[in-house]
Every structure is written in structure tokens, then in C-alpha cells.
Length: 327
Image (cartoon, rainbow, N blue to C red; front, side):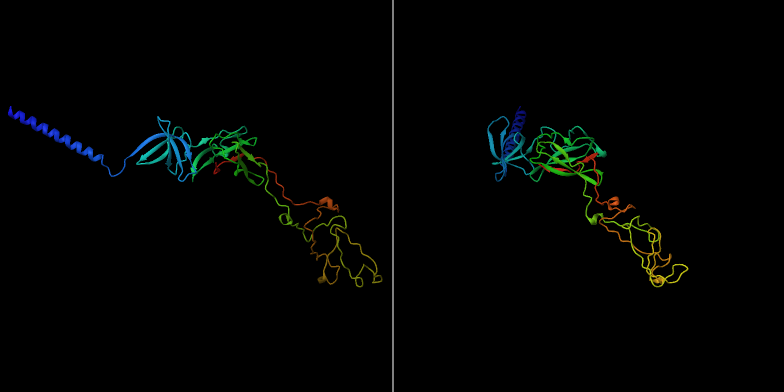
């Protein structure tokens, strides 16, 4: 009997000692060297973005009382109505960010195209957009290629949250036609996305420098036209020493008709101005600004200019790759 009583007493003493040790450990945990952090979920009810530092007001779940002056992390762009996670450490309150309630804002959304436009133009994929936070501002990015058959309205209305505050005109790649390689795309404050200048052609140039050219004329065999105004010229013949066939130099005052289309050309190397058929090299200057082409003599018959005026059709596709704008 005494042995059993001693064992029971020893067991009770051991249990009491274990309880005391556990109580000591629990007491140690309440004596931390720092303030523990607690987390709460709330809803953004107001934003003071112009204050220094910027803060927001939050209503903690289950309470309609607003807690103001809560700071937020730099990567978070608060919007009234966001569900946020708020951390409290001591007297400091910080909103860590939004708790996603739907598809992420950074995900790509396929655009709803207007009549006359379809996706995957030129095999470039669907036209898509997304919104990202970039250095303290919202930015909308685009990708993909739209095929076009008619119209200038690419997107009739963008959803709220993706519409710029003012018009954002941009240059986009397009079908190369008539030298045109780009077209303007306007992202309107109304939410519409428009194509502008689809048939605008590049400047072909209209100055003498940009239209200057040459006309090659063979030296030995060519034609000067039917009238004296086209290529007329003179050939000097010595009056006092030449032969007219069978006679003497009895007459020196007369004329020699020279056919316009067939005649001889010579130079001093032939011994006399008349020359021989073997010497026919010469040049005929042609004005670069206005001249004739043909045989009718009148300037209007062959006059022309050399201004380059290309024709450009509307694009068959428009690229949205790398297009982006700030809201």
C-alpha cells in the first residue's frame, strides 16, 4: 500500500512539473522583442493620392467605419472598391495590394473588332490588349494583326479602364502599297479605335533634282525631227575653195540645201568644214526643264513633267504589335 501511494505521489509531482514548464514557455512567447504583425482584409473606400506620402482609407470587413491614412506599397495602384490585404505592425498600417476577384488585369484580352475587320491578318495573330502598371501610371499594350476588307473603325468601343483620357495617335505597320509602309491608328477618348490616312501616299518629289534624268541619243545614227525647231543647226562650208561637180570656181555666192534627215558632219581634221561621212561625232543639248519627244515640232506634242505621284490603296492588314499608350 505504501509503495502504491509513493508511486502516485511521484506521478503527480512529475505532471505538476510538466505543467509549470509549459506555462514558462508560453510566458516566454508573450515577451517578444518586436511587435507582432496582424493581417486584416478590407475594402478601399477613399484615396488620397496627392498627399505625402499617398494614403488610402479602408473599411475593415464587417465594419462600415473607415480607417484613413493607410499607406500602400509602390507597385499597387489603388481603386475605390478594391479588396485589399492590410498589415498592422504596432501603429503602422500598410495595404499590401489587391486580392484578385476576377481575371488578372495583366492578362491579355481579345479585342472585339468592328465590321470590316477580322483577327489574324497576315498570319500575325489575334488583336489583343492588356493593362499594366508602369512607373506610377496605367498603360495599355497591344499585340496582333487585324485584317481589313472595308471601313475605318477598327474597334467601336473599348471597355472602361482601357480608354485614354485624350486621343492617342500612333503609327502602325500595314500592307506595303505604293511605297506606303505605315498607317495612323487613333485611340480616341470616346473608346473607339480608328484607322486614319489609309490611302495617303508618300511624297514622290516634284523638284528638278528629284525628277532629273537624261535622254541618250546615238551619235552616229539619230533623227532630229521634221521641223527646223527640232534639232536645226548649221554646217559651215568654205565659199572660196570647193567643188560642185564638173565646174570651176566660177560662182561663190550661192546656197547649198542640206537635207535635215541625211547629211554630212565634219570638223577641221577633214581639211575642210564640209567634212566626210566618216566624221559624224557631235552632241545635241536638250533642256532638262521642258523639251519635246517626237517629230511634230510643237512643244505641246511631247511636253511633260516628271513628278512622281504614286497611288495607295487602303491596307489589307494593320499591325498592332508594340502599340501602347498611357491612360
